[in-house]
Image 1 (cartoon, rainbow, N blue to C red):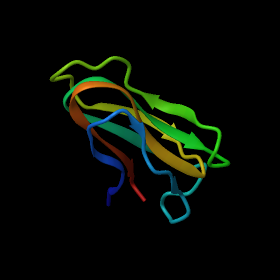
Image 2: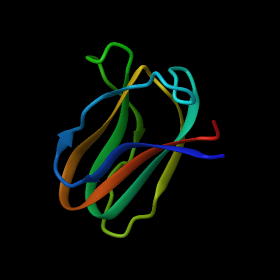
Image 3: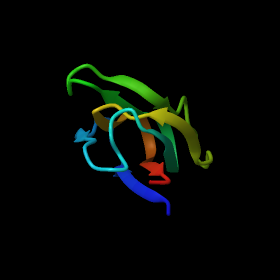
Image 4: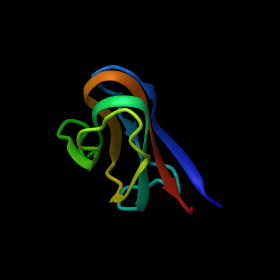
Length: 103
């Protein structure tokens, strides 16, 4: 059965979202999952970020520049202890970000 964890929902401003500790099966650090970015009329750029110390962040899945009506993006990533969404550029629209695992 496919498990879905929301990283960020309806993100419509330039901001780094709240971090979430990955501590519950099937979302444990080191687990390979699929990151999903679902732009909704978004013109901008965003990333799913990971951290092992909740202070130093790296982009695990970067969208690049998105324009209105770009399609959903998928990328296989390895979970860090902490995960968060980050919208780095936005002029219109919003984005949803998820993690998928067969768990």
